[in-house]
Length: 322
Image 1: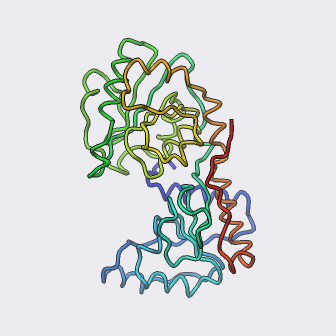
Image 2: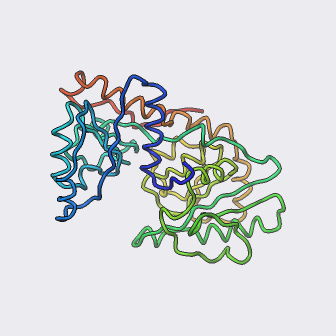
Image 3: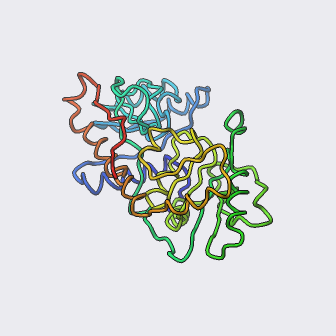
């Protein structure tokens, strides 16, 4: 994980880890995916590919089947005896896969071919290691795209308020994700930002070291899924988020404080007093990669029971962990 920066590469690492740990009898074969798209070049690439015969196939890539040409689907369908599955953040788009494993508990809870595996994180990587003599505050990076979400980004506003609150406190460190990694917020940069570049920052190992020493994590822009929220919470951080930036189906499972539109320095005392490392971790412990992988393998091992219906009673409400 020292060089791993991409989300689905991280997924693959932990899926592999927990299959080997809990299901040693299962033989796993790996095949690198080609590009997405339907150009002649990409179609020709998949026509030339060969895939080993297998009982089940898991495509670990966002919209892994939907975004690839028929040539890819036809090849894997011809060599897969039973279930072909994919993983995605939500269940809004279902393609030809037999099962879509999704992570955000929203939309229809009994949607055909969709099984919830929930948010997934690794408790052994993300764990509380805070310095009790300091308060470490982590501010998320600005939104890297365009349009409405760019306009409602609050990175500068939050950075300004938090730094002005912290600047005369020796025991407070304010850090912020930035282009290329992480920076300490100070008098020179609190009111300026570089354009953020996705997948050009910290490796997973490096990021976890930051999460593990964080007391408070400020969400600054609207997120599709917000895995950093889960990872920081698993490491014991209090999550602070403006209204609507994290889907309520996810945020309600996290120890958090909501930011109102009138966020100001005088709200910081309430935020500081809400820090509870043990509670933050306890509430999200069920959202582990081990549990997610168990659901995936249950689907494969019991395929003969599931294949005639392909509808699951997915739980979309909060887990009510105190």
